[in-house]
Length: 84
Image (cartoon, rainbow, N blue to C red; front, side, top):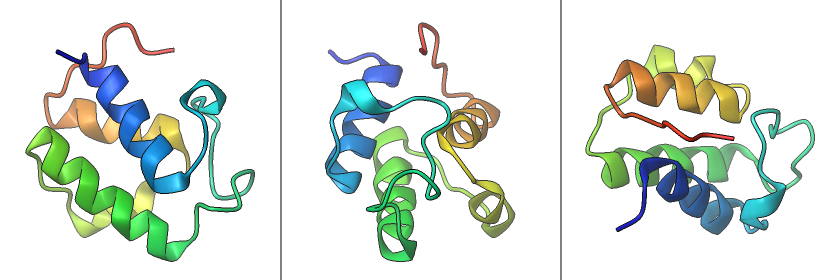
């Protein structure tokens, strides 16, 4: 069974079409060409489904990088222990 951090990386890798090993807390639309508005919506949907959470619009707008995604998930009681 995958740990939550591995699940997060798998979702981001699949949606953004990048290698999991290249994803850091600083990964963002500024340095990831595939992180466009469409893929941002796809990430929200996939993360909500994967972790059985619901993000508010405010949370969605606050996300500027992977670190922000981690923090949003943790606010929804998704433990990401062992995160890079």
